[in-house]
Length: 481
Image 1 (cartoon, rainbow, N blue to C red):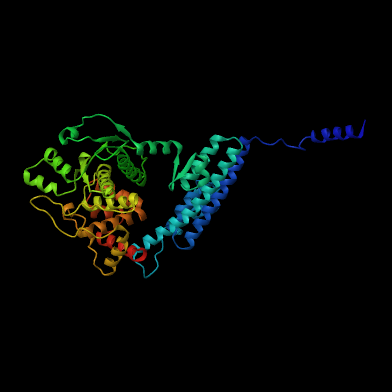
Image 2 (image 1 turned 180 degrees about the horizontal axis):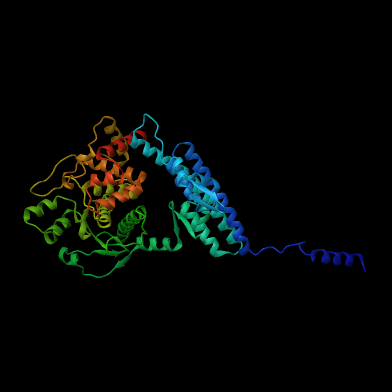
């Protein structure tokens, strides 16, 4: 036998010996081992988080973390002992006597109020848990990446979904699930397409419409997912109207945790946008109810609308389309606040209208104040300058103890709401919506659909009186504005 042949024969003999070489496991068989290792690592990270809170004497929140550990490692020794379990044979059993020895509440240091301590403790818990969640998301995203590489598509998708639940901003998981970041927001291809189609709208040719005949003018008309707009302005401007109204709708629905395809209205909201005073007066004469004195008063206003009716009409200022678009975004927000929460409180409608006008347009021109009616035309301060200056103005008022108390605002009618009260409403709502969104959404639902008293709802959801809401907000303004 030749030397080369001898080597080959020996190789075959060696590799055929029992136990010398194991065949590589299939990816589906390896997955269980991979997942088990990931879960052990995640559980260990949450245990660290629990230990951190325990050392800081935030025992209530530490327990919450330890309970979460058990969702990853059911028999984790540290978590079980921290929750009062003892080992009996192969099982962990809750020992009431042992559990009684363990601290269950957060320990408040001396010299700090109960309310402030609660806020600080909650923030610390959220910070520690968020870091652990991000770690868990990173591990799940990595697991998903490995699964995708090995052809385990279902397991990859499930791992990425778990990653996104724990950290919505995890880029690996988002991209794995087919998302793309658009203007700071993760969207699927379907969501992107739906959004673009909604914003674009479609031209409608159903002349003569109701208003064309009465006003003696030709209107361009467009329908989008949630709006119908008729206007004398050209199609290019009409598209801008539609885009800004739909963008406002999309921002609002996303902020309240809904899909932007959800129908908040039940039918399309309607805008009629005219050009100049002459057309506006003709509209009031032909389509607005009431006696002549009421009509004369309405002619002095730039627009009118009924929130429950999803119907608005206005005229644009000559050469100032920005103001016209601003008013439409403002009114769109009124529609949303009313129809989503059934809220008709002036300070909430105006505050949210400013919030979204600034968010969508980065400026604001419109204000629903000092209108009243013919018999009681309210006056008052209308202009507090450009929205870019509001934070400085609000802080100045707070530092000088000159801002109006929330108790003075929360039951005021729209026609009596002063401009600085409206701007304070914008600031309070921005603070609650951006910093306490989950609780604020509960509060809005309670005072809207639930029809609870506003102060009662604050006490129930936040544990605050109106004065405490003011104090918390003023502290935030002093520190952040």
